[in-house]
View: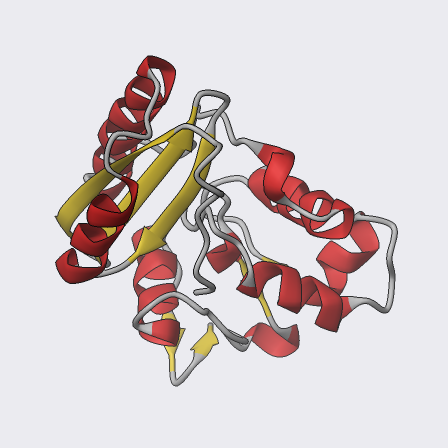
Length: 183
């Protein structure tokens, strides 16, 4: 997944979940909402801490604490939707449009890149939707894993672990994935 954290003039707080069924996850929030939920390892998280120590607000600490709890509930099958704010300030207009539509996809649902493009009023922009998915800095909470290619194929997934991680998340939501395809 694309590297993303805001500039030093934005106050934010980092959190880390070391072991989930899909691997380790870093979380970051500004005082307005989540700005990053990404699969990563402990070394990456420690590097972010070294770079950004002391740049958090009380609101961001609370948002990250809520996010950690909700992500744990998701992986333990006690939560199907996230009730977390997202700080949309850092997105281009098109990416924001696509990711907001993705954010609304219910647990266990699937849509294709083409269907999502049509949903946001850009029929024929399936590849652009795919690029927006690839730049999603709030993985899992903005469930880009629920967007697949035509014919049930997984398409891509830019988080560490790639399609294996996407497959794990889809299986957690009740789908059967075989040979890179939802069946």
